[in-house]
Length: 93
Length: 370
Image 1 (tube, rainbow over the protein chains, first blue to last red):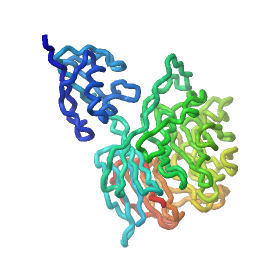
Image 2: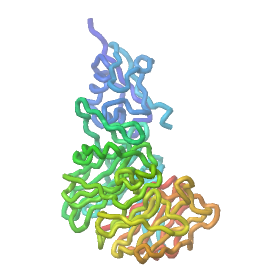
Image 3: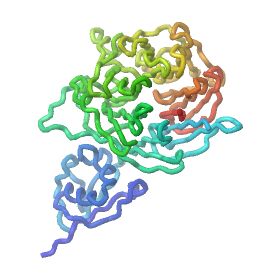
Image 4: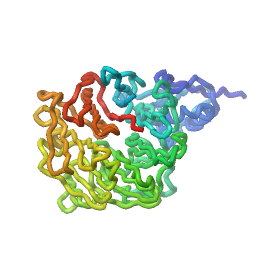
């Protein structure tokens, strides 16, 4: 059976710094999905992840509307066809 | 044309001196947090460090005097070794190995085109050899176990805010660390010496106040014509070295205060230095609400309090460590404040002109020096 790939959407605020269009990419965890996205948009990686590969302190990620648990190793599972949203936390101002 | 770049919480503003004096000629990165700029006298390129908050720390370069900018690589911390166990600093929390702030940017020597040094939070010293296209962390300093004992001063994490490249030999560097003293290398960073002997840290317990690795030099300024003379505005006073940082002497009795962040030294006269004092550690505003600049012309024996053109009532401007600069002529100075005021002097500080009192909070003031 053909499984639809996850789709990644980015906050509007990031777009003025680095263009991040919504794209379907392969991957079974958040880490795999993001690394697949950044493979063709390397500059965006540093806007979302810190030097240790963790989700930046004031960013948030949702998988089908559910906030992720693992910000450090990005191990949350991403089902086929899921929508991943990368947004800003309000905590950083 | 003389130019000066003002890094602020909401943009980079460029001053130019035209026929009618100094004025803001250009605003760049408006709305963005610009924490520092650097002009490279060898290439003429400009660099701007940005803190995008949510999106991290970025570095941009302009090859056309600031008309257009391109994002370039930012320093990136290395991966932690497998099984790494950090020592615990005073604050109790080891630093993350991730860039938090670009706090110092300095060109390498005249004969080292492309070399740029960058000091960061949390306590990293980076070097680029290709004009900022790529960066590498200085491992000898980063791997020194004493580096792990550094702790935050002002910021939550320790940082390198001052980099002095010796004009006689660019392999000789001195760096200032809050909090971690002053460090010296004579071989481009292969080996390092802790050189803060004589500094005093009143914020530490009595038996630790003279330990070199706990010192909080807010800013280190090196005289260009006599690089063995260095001035430091320290957390609890003013210190001076006349032997290339081998030893330091505290200078006391300066009115209205020896507390502050910024210091600059005349490029051709090691006896002349300027400071912008605040009241004290716990009261970070000008004494009695009067903005003043203190200046010594005799190596610290006496100080003048300069006030002409500066507000002398109900002024609560604080001047950060990078927000005072002196141009290569030794007569033109500028400083900006946390409350968005900007002043310039063309007579070595005798008198000051207000250029704005409506800027965003000022982080850094840097003349273009060729």
